[in-house]
Amino acid sequence: MPELIRINIDKPERDIVSTAAESLKKGELVIYPTETLYGLAADCSSEKALQRLFDVKKRDRTKPVPLIASTMEMINEYTINVSGTAKRLAEEFWPGPLTLIFRASENVSRIVTGNTHTVGFRVPSCRLCLDLVETFGRPITATSANISGEEGCSRIEDINGELKNYISLILDGGETNEIVPSTVLAVYSDIPVMVRQGVINIDRIEEFLGFRIVKSNTV
Image 1 (spheres, helix red, strand yellow):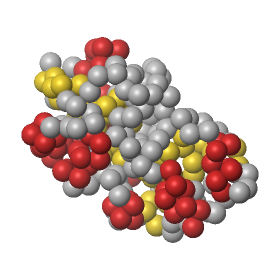
Image 2 (cartoon, rainbow, N blue to C red):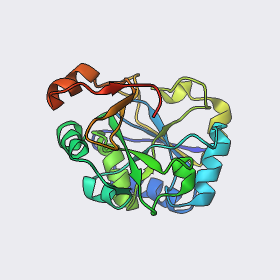
Image 3 (tube, rainbow, N blue to C red):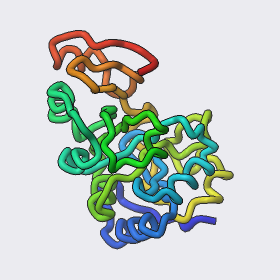
């Protein structure tokens, strides 16, 4: 059974954050709360940890895995050809529940991209997430803590027990603020493509940009 540690999501205890970062450095998986749903963290640079994440979630190997970072500077190390629109969206909506899909640099594992050569990033508004990434020193996976095909969870109690059996550490921050996942946009060019409607309404994004974006379920 995993170790379960209660943590303050808004003022996370440093020693607990350090414990979680050490688990990630060992290639282990960690369940953690975000401002939307509970996520499943793995080291984005560890092939072994990423393979385990896919096995535990029973996730299709062709599906990319989203990542979270703490700054745009960190994201720049893993992306190429960042459009002006992407930069505007990042400045306006980050930190927050908006995932932007970029062209991936060679620093990103093919396991993360699902061989799509693209990578989704978010800078969360959750203090715990930011502290964990900063302490760890590089991005972590932000896929939801569930078996693929099941609903994401806003409470530890609702997470599938089968998944929990393969996790080394669970950070329990109580019930998360949202039960809706992040909004996802592909930003390969200056005209974004909506991949998923989430917390941030597309109308709000279009109002900010001053033009309509492409609405599609595929990219």
